[in-house]
Length: 428
Figure: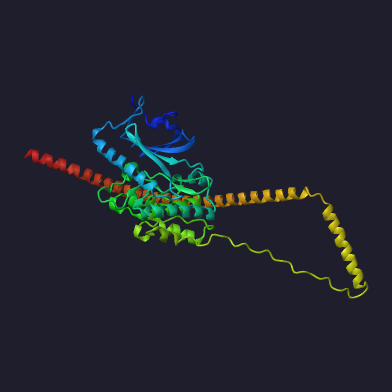
């Protein structure tokens, strides 16, 4: 039966058994991503399958993909060609922060490419618990910016920068994935972007992408999304949609965020692309240049020398007493059980960690509280505006009702006259 399933079932094999499907990792409008095993090495990999949603169907018994609607075949063929050419382009970039493509092939009437499997989870998972420390956020943004610089230098736009498309490798490095919406900016014969087919990510796409025209997309489009991602990380909430930014600007960001980061977000999320940074270097110039905290040295106590007694006990006797006291104190400290010290150190470390975690939670909750307060204020303003409109409409209705009553009164007054006129005319 055709069309019974969309994805390959677990256990399916590709390339004569070279790859074995384990499960689906994700599915979008442009393709399906699977977790698979490279059976020869026993190594986990991720496999992206070209499957244009709404145009492709899969035969449940053979896994073959077909295009039932003839009119869609040219479009699917064009997108499949783009899928393969972009995979080859990405594979050639050789950047630690761009997903590593290690194989590409055709099978089941479609195309596949194989990627290194990233085990560290997604940035979207990490930001679910709230805003992350600014230093951590900037580390991620710098790594994604490095990937973008490489992409842009090869004439490619990503067009879907967001936390869900940023994963982490075994060394906790940010890696940019999912080029399904990407497009070339230097192609003369094919300027079509698949963004018109698979949509865009609300809050992370600027107006020129929401209202996509082919020539309107530039590196500044990706930099808007990078700024929106930075907003998401430091505020802990999804960025507002581009239309809201156009109408009302960005909401006020929490006070704990540095002025440099606030400015970087504000400038990169400008509605007009000409007002944004035009390349990655210009974006990075807006960020803080030094994120390494300078430790404050603890004040060193000045050595104190006991003053010579002014009278009474000779100085030599006082010195001898102090020396004996020091020896006794040293013996007491020396004879203390050494096992007590690690216990106290461990307790201090645990309490310090717990305090830092609680402080982060407090900062995240304060940021959310402020954002919710701003949202509530905005909603109240909208309600007040609507109430004003209702009141205006009620006044209009009341006025029209009065006018209608006056007209009805005039009709009633003229009706007898009209009847007498009719009778008069009929008698003649």
